[in-house]
Amino acid sequence: MRIPPIRLPVLIALAMAIPTRPVGASSLLDYVGQCVPFARAASGIQIYGDAWTWWGQAEDRYQRGHTPRIGSVIVFARSPKLRLGHVAVISRIVDSRVAMVTHANWSRIDGERGHAEQDVTLYDVSPGNDWSQVRVWYRDMDGLGGSTYPVSGFIYPAPAGDAPATVHKARAAAELTGRDPDFVAALIDAYARN
Image 1 (cartoon, rainbow, N blue to C red):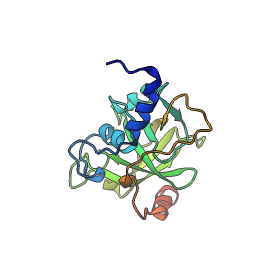
Image 2 (tube, rainbow, N blue to C red; image 1 turned 90 degrees about the vertical axis):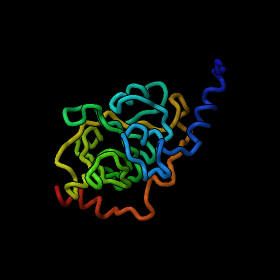
Image 3 (cartoon, rainbow, N blue to C red; image 1 turned 120 degrees about the horizontal axis):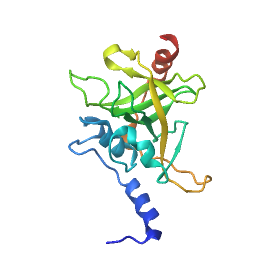
């Protein structure tokens, strides 16, 4: 069945409003698996394929930029340490260089990768404060990992071409952020330990 073009934006908006969970998880935070299905379920952004490809796939489909917004997906570029890239959902903005993400398949939890983590510190270490390079809190180190990762940018859960005056809030799942995230620890991780 061919969908008339005029109805496509309405269908996209409806799809973004439907709460989802990654397949096999009773809760967003119970998920164990890859970062891509997790980010898709947590953000409502309907992109498939390896994480590093999300940036290019989002062109002309979703708004993109270089500033974190709650509910946006940060796209880590492909690199020697991230052969398939990585995607995570911004859960909190702490200051101009520190944000928090909720994501899956980063740290080892109970000895295995794939688990979801909520409100993890993300630190912009780019020379121009443009979020093109970040460091991420890593459970095994109990702090920011030693690696710097290149970032393509942020995908916002709003269709491309929407008027800039239109305000879009992410349909982020209720579990995207915790009730009392530790902002102080995030700032200490970013500024005091580096």
